[in-house]
Image 1 (cartoon, rainbow, N blue to C red):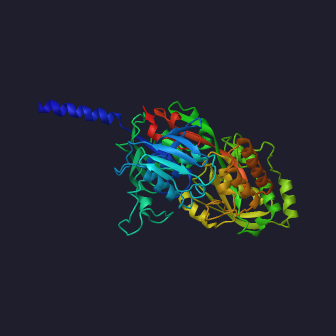
Image 2: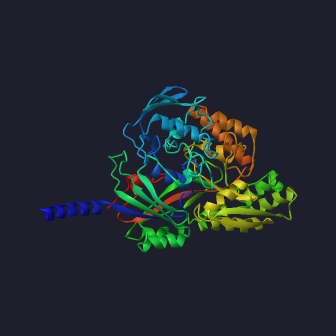
Length: 514
């Protein structure tokens, strides 16, 4: 009898083990931290969707679907009421309540990275344990968009002090903090081990609330591989099951491979260079900035380096966004660039420095090298330094170079967000201009962006945002390069297509591996 029982239990164990799937994933980099509020970047937001859950999230067709909130309704021009799920546990075992949402919102407003997005939010009103009113100081048409960024944290877990006597809720970018090394979210996965830059392991959370999800991946092993060729080779050799991004030079090879799923889509991340007007006086001269833009053949970069897997840009917002202006034209003209340098008094050129990441954007290092070569044709001698993104952001924030590469995907899927972070006058109190290392500042542009953010009439808002794009274009506020396509490749048995989206946040909790 005991033997039969043992045999039956063994069969159950084997059946369960057979159903559990491990996904071996290779990305160009791993998350900078385990703290969801430490860095506003694509890699961190991908991590947030694994370990934490937002109140609501985007669907593939750019609508909203419930997550931690089961429903929501607008009470008045300033207030949206969110009704929370009652069956949600954090990884610590603590139940999620409205108090955790309120605590999370308060922390977001303290974050250097996120506070600019949440400036307009005031203190929420807790109605009961599972009902909360989120309130803005002015009418705000993008409140639902922002709710996709409210990844609820475990207030009990992150309160108090750690073993070192430091506050557990401290937001620290690069040094030690409790939140940088510990997590308690509500998401489908828990972090079981992490060696930054080497490997990160996620395990499915047994008490995850979403029992309707068809996702069957029990474990995710993330290995960062910054080298394009090595990442592709890892997929083709069977070393990993999933890679992103796919190097443009490998698109055709992977598409033709019968054992590979290859998925691409047009993206809205704009890749730019910022010219530091404070650090390098030459860049404070409008004609010099215009010359730099005219010297860069961004269509050539798209054709040769990106192999057509991007769209040359001459403004921030791509076609389809409210701010897009159809009559703004490309400006590559080498002779014009030389004329502008002469008119500016820099016919003989000058020297400057540049930094760029080498594993953040597709072919980022090669793009930087190409731009260096192009600028040399108008006498601008550039000393280039590239580095992994884990090192890059500290250098970027410190503005160590005269020219710095910056890519941006709009957090709110809205044109205004580009300007809020990349063009508005830098303001540490509000968080506006957080990534404006060019130190461009135009009070009129700031006024228009702020006006757009409280304008509820769609047509009026579109007209305001188009004015913003025209001002930035005329001021040569930054150097636009291209909008980067998104790409993923997997083994044939990994059904990636249903869980990817234009935001580049794969919902891996719903991933099915056959």
